[in-house]
Length: 539
Image (cartoon, rainbow, N blue to C red):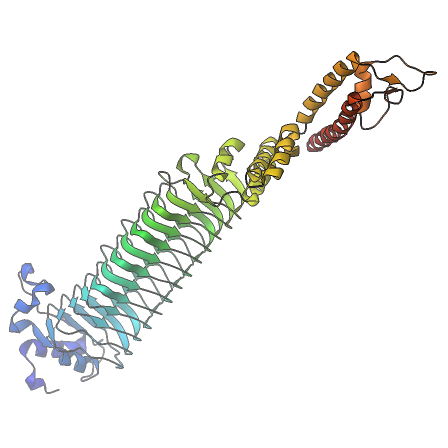
């Protein structure tokens, strides 16, 4: 490039480059420096993109002992800044600049790139390697920011960045690799889809105070995202559209504290198959209008929904299906509106609150070690009976086992009795009749000492009957005194002999009564013995 063809401001930049000095073309009036109004800037603030390309591509050498760099403030850059496949060894630092055309950095090898408080009609950096930071703080990028396949060895800073591409990709960062932190915070805003599928972040991913808007689809598409440290979507984070973290891995904790998610009647947060090394916080005024799903997720610590508001009245509001977690804190601020699906989840400690249970639950296959608070069997049975799939045996067995683990055997038996009664409702009429009889007599075996009451009643009945009608004598040579009480007792005892039954024999209808007492005594006696044995073994 011929230096004689340069404008005065371009010549200043050219001469400052070898020493890495800054060139400031901004106006003394701050009101005139907003890049949004760059079309009104005068000739003294115009710089051709080809001048920047020439400097970055090595048109002149740095001065000995100096670090060359392009440092420019307050310029309107005309033409295309095309550095595709270029080898750039010096930093590029632009502040408060406006581009007429999208810069192209695709597949370039760059030193650190700073474009702070700039206005860009797009930025294409697909496959770019940046040895240092990519600093876009406070900039406004329309028509898409493309970072797919890029590799940034330092920090990616998009604090306060506004990405505008309604209905399209506001940020296209598939398979992006950032070795340090990624900042999308402090009033970061995206109108369009933010894409991070398969991206790798070596530090923290921070969306604190960010606002994402793409109500017709995914606000944040980050399936298979891999973050080595923590992920922050809190501090006023909001999203209209789906937050998709399916199959993502977080090496620290994931925070949605106080976040507001909205995707009515669809999925607001899809964290299926998510893996989190420590905790997940969807708590402290976290709200979601739409499904929140952690189906198949693995949380090594706590999943907290304390103080949350979950709403999806016509479908599933919360899915913990197949979740694995050490602890789940299911204490939202108000009752869950919609179905809470916990089927086949494996939870170490489940903490909940009966005042905020969902009206509709799915609990089949749910496994837990401890419930806190355990509550009474009556209260927990109300929890089980909210299952929309109707009767299933496993939830009752799991709850009974939990009570037995806590030493609350009576509550455990109450649960198993309720299981048998609820199962009876699903059976045909013959089985219902048999079951009703088992329930009345012995509480399906879980109320064995109820049989003792029946024994006493039958003993009284037999005593009265045989005191009014003494049975015939079988052996007149050896006749003991007839005692209706002991005769009835002798009939009912399954073992032993009181000397009455083998001497006296009733006839007619009284023979049927005697046979009934023998059979009843045998059945009820065994039930009482079994109940007593279980009681003694528990002691």
